[in-house]
Every structure is written in structure tokens, then in C-alpha cells.
Image 1 (cartoon, rainbow, N blue to C red):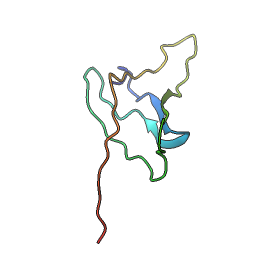
Image 2: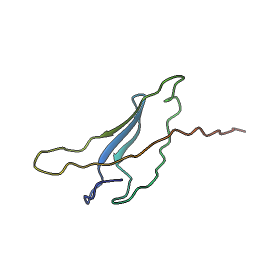
Image 3: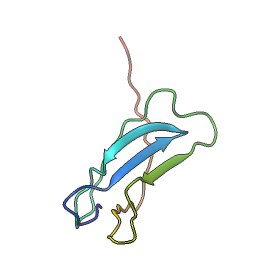
Amino acid sequence: MDDNAPTKAPIEILVNDKIVFKGGSQFPDNEWAARSFPIPEGALKAGANEVLLRNVGDSALDSMPPWFAVTFFKINSTSQTKE
């Protein structure tokens, strides 16, 4: 869910320090929604992986900072065969 501001909260999604997404949050205001972001090949590794969801918006004290909320995330494996 994104904040109720006219603009979308600026975010970054990183997997093992590789940017998966950077830009406006892509989530709607006032409702929950699912979004998918492809993970670049080679970003995941065997064993533990780190996923970072980062709000990069301005948090000035004189205004309400932009925010977004995530209730859960999951990484799905998709199998693609090349012919």
C-alpha cells in the first residue's frame, strides 16, 4: 500500500545489493495489492540471500514523509525451458 499523497513514495528493491526496482512504489493508495518484480539473473545465490525494501523519499521534519507498507513478500522460482 502506498501513502495517500498525490505522488508515489520513491522506493528501491534490492536483492543481494543488486537493484531489482527503483522508482514510484507501484502500489495503490488505501488498499492492498500484489506486485511482481523480476529478479535479474545471477542476483540470487545458494544459501542465504538478502532482500532490501528501501524508502528513499525525503523525510523532512516540516512535512509528512512518503511511506509504503508491505505485509509480506515471497520469491517464486519460475522454470523456463529454452528450445
